[in-house]
Image (cartoon, rainbow, N blue to C red; front, top):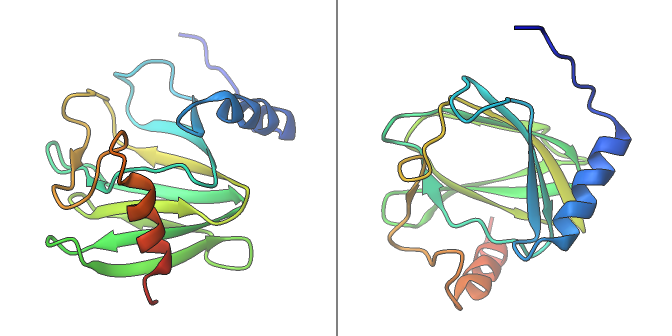
Length: 158
């Protein structure tokens, strides 16, 4: 197999940001790994303010995950098993640059600026049915209560 090189350029970031703006989910991934069976998975996650990522963990199979914020700012939330906030970390401009979490850690993030661009790495392969365990105490992405839940996270005391 021939090696490939993919530069992460302002033009690439802008292209994926434009795609995120067209997405009903208000976010878009750009994968650097060529197939879902690759290991590790490396990708850009471009998100607009107001996107909701349901709290989840990667437990079965166990997967660690790393996030680096390339543009913008996010609040990264860690939860106890009962859904209470165990930690909130500001990442991005003027704050920590990223975070690395162990397998099984409940987490989500909220975009604090107009948009945020993260570079993420986690083990592959990706199987949609088992990649994430969604938190039973939080609404799923399509739930009408998702926006209110996201706001409650942002309003929670540090």
